[in-house]
Amino acid sequence: MKKQGFTLIEMLVVMAIIVILATVVLAVVMKGLKKAEEVEEVSDTRQENIQTLIENPRYDELPQHLQEGRFGEKE
Image (cartoon, rainbow, N blue to C red; front, side, top):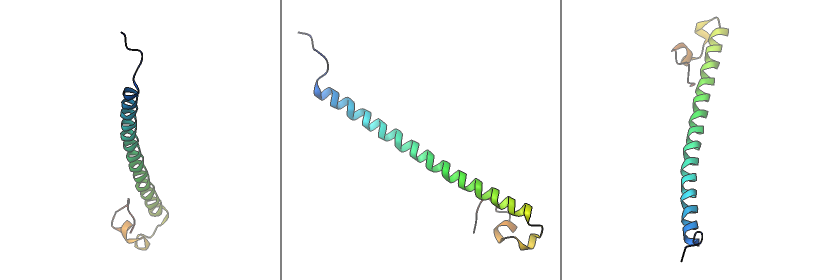
């Protein structure tokens, strides 16, 4: 006698595997998005600090972290 289709257990196992794989992929994607946001924040901070250097002609009036050449971070 030939088997017709899948049994309920087989379908549940396949669905469980798909859910586990989707969870792993989603976790990796979320981690990547978080890292991208952190990189963007550092880049924005660096650009703001460089703009401050360009607009401020007096070096001694700059914030301390810019006088020390740390462009990508704030105090």
